[in-house]
Image 1 (tube, rainbow, N blue to C red):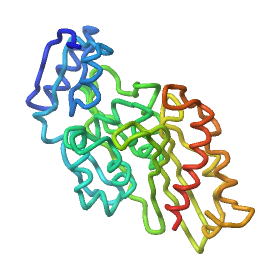
Image 2 (cartoon, rainbow, N blue to C red):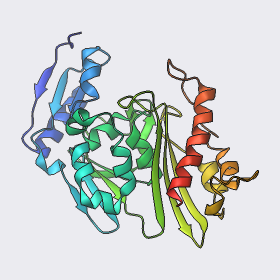
Image 3 (cartoon, rainbow, N blue to C red):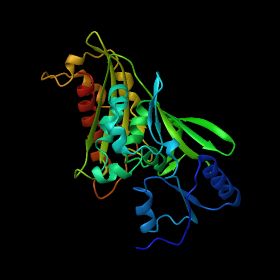
Length: 294
């Protein structure tokens, strides 16, 4: 299908981009920001989105790159998934981001799709929003009025809806660099290697003296937004790591993961019903914690 007609604007600076978006917001025009286009272009072709204009950020190199800032790593919004994967800083300081990014679609998409674009798209079936939620990332946005920061817990509002206001553009994400003792894993169940996750689990586990001191669990595709498995995070504290996957009749880690679907509203579609997704959430959370806690 051919997209509906739209105007095309390619700003030469971030200030110009903010000006264009601000003017559009003031006039009530529906304007979309174009980054890698891997999520937006299919919507345009199917006419599920028909903006009056596209603002292409491709000429803004200041929005691209990975920077180690000590307590966190800053990833520019236009940094491609492939660039994230090839970054030594990402692999060493925030490995959960690398693990999840490696599962995004296929190499062709990862070379064009952007880290910030996948976040701003706010698809609960996407792999990276759950990671952002689990790691308590902070989103940095810019408008003509200046910058502001949005915690991940407030950024994902609803299905394909973020906290970005009209006239704002995401410029980057602050990803906390967790210290020694943390283990990470991203567990994903999907039909084919290139498809969306039916369910995914992003796990960060802090270990000490053979027990789990803290866990952060983000769930993919278990609601209209990514979800934190708070019940599991609370139940898993103090549990012996050695118990994970034990052959005995009692596995306290599995018992803790029984509440992984608590507070979720998994969707029903051609790929899975809600009860199946709830089962997957419990199983995959157990697996993810088992690997992260090693």
